[in-house]
Length: 77
Image (tube, rainbow, N blue to C red):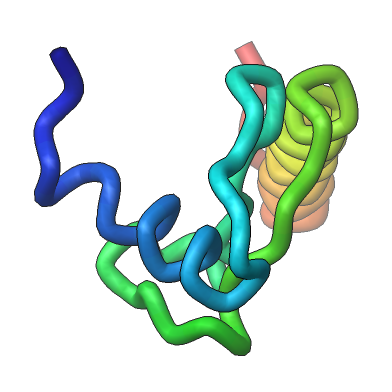
């Protein structure tokens, strides 16, 4: 059973939509702050789309870090 506190974002979204979310529907926090359950910050995505979004974000973060290190003349590895 899931923790009710951790499901606040799902409950907020279900109330806004007027229906229960499906098992493959993920609630995404637009600002990446899991404690910000403001309806304006929440959107519904399919599981695959949500995974792709986060994988892309992680890849961009790694690239930014590598570019910053390169500019500073630091070794990447």
